[in-house]
Structure formats: C-alpha cells, structure tokens
Image 1: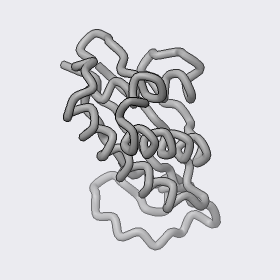
Image 2: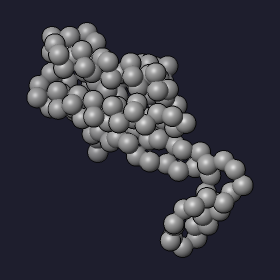
Image 3: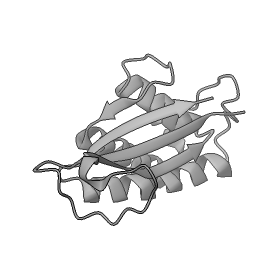
Image 4: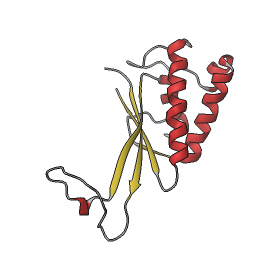
Length: 141
C-alpha cells in the first residue's frame, strides 16, 4: 500500500473513425477507438508533488479522483521544481511535504530531491508534447 500517482495524456481522435492504428487485441476494433491514453508519469509516495496537485488542480479535494490538468499548470509546477532544485532551502515553502496514510517520508532528504528530478523529466516531456493533448492527474492509496 502507498500513494501511487499518475500523469496521463489523452489524445482524442476525431474524424470519420478510420484511424491508422495497428492494433491486434481481441475485442478491440480500431475503428471505434476515439481516445488514446498514454501514461507520461508515475510516482510512488512523492507526497509533495501530490499535495501540489491537490492544492492547485483539485481545489483541495483529495479523493483519488482523475483531474484535468492544463499545460500551464504543468509548466507552473515545473518552474517550482526547478526553483527548489536550484535552492533546496525553498523546499518547505514552495513544495512542502505532506503527511498522510501511507504517503511516505516527510523529510527533505535525497529521496525528496530524487522525486523532484523525476518530476522535472516527466513535466518537461509533457509540456514539450503539449499540442492538442489533454492531461489528467490521479492518485490512489
């Protein structure tokens, strides 16, 4: 058990329903596929990142719901991550840890900063892809 977190990208397929997808899965008809979902990021017990999403995307409601995230919000979090990486003393102010049931450590230790590095890579990829993509964050524990 523990806090598992995901950033996913939805690409919506419009048009006549004839998409050039080479799918070979029983029961899946490529002509009926309207959304492609990709997992862009996965975190485990990165409670500071989770709390940022709860506060800035989910209006303070933490019920393991899937929530729409704008590219601008992803860029905002990326900017904060970079600031904290540049000056570790900013961590408690800009990206504080959050305790919770199975949320992991609340220390500002090497694991916290490894989570930030992972987050930076995830967000840089997402912001770069942008375009017509639609992003969602969800979590479970």
